[in-house]
Length: 229
Image 1 (cartoon, helix red, strand yellow):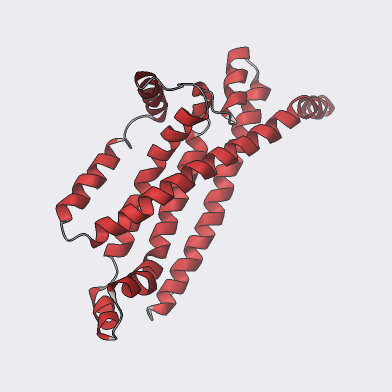
Image 2 (cartoon, helix red, strand yellow):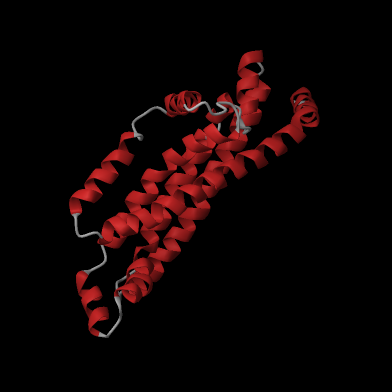
């Protein structure tokens, strides 16, 4: 037991700074990807939900959904190939970030679309009858009621992105995957765990935090609708 603790202490002394630095890189990469995906997907989901041509929503969601069954490692490789074909740098932050954004788009746009569409038409008609404009109905009625759905999409996208971010180390985007792949190449279990365990803990932490926010929003929305929580 003493030997195990001594080995752990020595490992943390040797690689603790690397783990902290790469955890920060991992979080930054995740936040950037989810932020970009949200900036694109939330307005797109709202527009699709309000569009009178329902076929457009089916087409757009279908196109975005194409990327979901693609294995994450294969998608990272495809993005690298795309960057090469466009004569862009295929190693570094950009290709890794693009791959993460593509994966994060679907749950956010789908949940935003669903959230807006599920708002009861009666509520919208009452708001319109009170003299509210379409813009006011959207921002004061539909979006607040759809917020729990949007948060659920952000939660899924964030957890997925944290996991997939370990793979973008293959294209030179620094993350906890650096330690994992370094450990695999050197047959060092400590390095593999040094990258895998923080990634797992981050995914669990953000799943819990965003799940808590989602539940609070759902409870608030239910009370606002006069529904039991």
